[in-house]
Length: 230
Image (cartoon, rainbow, N blue to C red; front, side, top):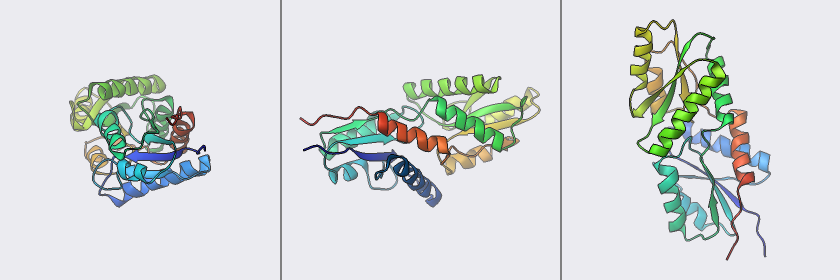
């Protein structure tokens, strides 16, 4: 007996209702594109966990990490939750970034917040100590630089140097006319608040429920190589 795969979108988790609602909105948008339900799970702060969701599912399942790079949650936490569920027919896709789709969203968000050619740009990420995630973030900064036609500085809201506030200050010291922060965050929350308090002339909104984000997640589900039951 064959089963259509179940779809599980896994996010970090937040105490902010707006952040929780955003993940729900993303899952709904993806479910409309796929024509099937998308379950939501969280690795931290609140539940249900991926383990709890998977235990209630039959047949093959595809798990998409709603993370922008390969950090600890993607490489360690999510696989551990999957293993603990006892579900033996699960495939975990790559993280959402870096990818050309995310670069286009970043560019759109910059235009929305008033970016103009000649403005200095700081890519504000949450930050990570994971070397693979650091590589992903550097690549994303390079991709955005190529689209904008000017160097984009990479800085961090939590883990890593320079901080976004320090990067903004350094650019102003060097004589930058205007400094814009491009938010490389999925949703509003503490880290986005730190970007807003960085001293930049303008701060773009998080990636959020941009239509290209919904399409990217749906594509991750569609392109997953489905596991074969033993």
